[in-house]
Image (tube, rainbow, N blue to C red):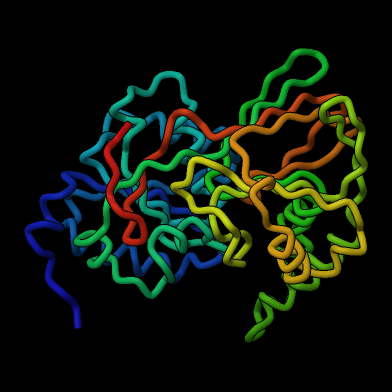
Length: 330
């Protein structure tokens, strides 16, 4: 039975923008949530924007094009997965021409992709009612990971990760998950086939992932994976020892390829090694050879001799959440 919009739902936000990725994993289910948003806000208050197939820069331009509609009284719903959400957050925090008011636009991820880690941490499973989020949710500031990579020629690239970043094996796995061989697998059309194909692709990638060397505090170390987590959930797996709203992030380095037999084993090993020394607010190292990184599951090649500096962004993004209580904006 549908619940009629309450006065609180109707007046809390004056406008709603839905950024819809039509090729995301759960696009059909996401369309139903978009219809529900239209019922709650009335269609006259909702703008639906489709993401571009031309990639992150095109989507960044799309968001900036509609910047005049952003602000604290506009709810920006993200009908896509963690990659689409990452593009939105990175744009809000780093685009030069946005005002501080526009950067504070509240976000609501709609479980539109594969892992949907941020959506789950903010509001639980995809069975959560949108009416409940709009009625009970609090707008919370979240400081994401900020990774500044400076290459040998002086080129500086700043990447943002709301949930987690990784260098090495998990980045190599993210790369394989984005390839056509995985996305177009025939298993996806079979009941239970998608998670099975994920296990096959990820396990093979973790076993094949190359090692890479990093220099940290004048010591050179050969590693297979270096993970940075900003929240308690990573690639659908829960219970990492940090929350989205903490002022620390979790870091773990694994050196032995034999540990990467499967993701559950990887996380089990990470959790067994939990101690205070793995919670930090800053990390710095230099890659000695070419490697791969990922930011919320989006892979990126990292050239040799790149200085990598990771900290929590001083500029937060804002999200509507039923999980976390309200906080005063900073």
